[in-house]
Image 1 (cartoon, one colour):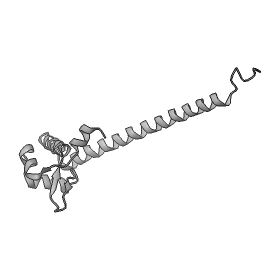
Image 2 (image 1 turned 60 degrees about the vertical axis):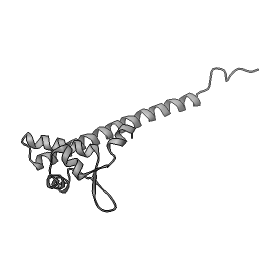
Image 3 (image 1 turned 120 degrees about the vertical axis):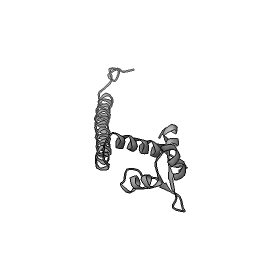
Length: 122
């Protein structure tokens, strides 16, 4: 994971800060968590801690709601995105495996065939 992404995913913000930055109530934020739209980390004392990525998601949920989408439609949107990401990753992985296999077969062929100098005697 890149350093920038690592920092964006660090859960360092308590719910009060998130409320100020997103203009959402604690009840709304907890509801989105109950609906599975966000998954904040928990401290040993069971306090919710949020990352910048969590706040981005909350703001995106807020935008979806302002556009007229309901919670079920938002869940479908995120499920579709997840499915596309999985398919893209799988397609890339399959292509990478094929390329690696072809490279290996080519390399084995090079080593198995005699070199032009193998018939020379010194």
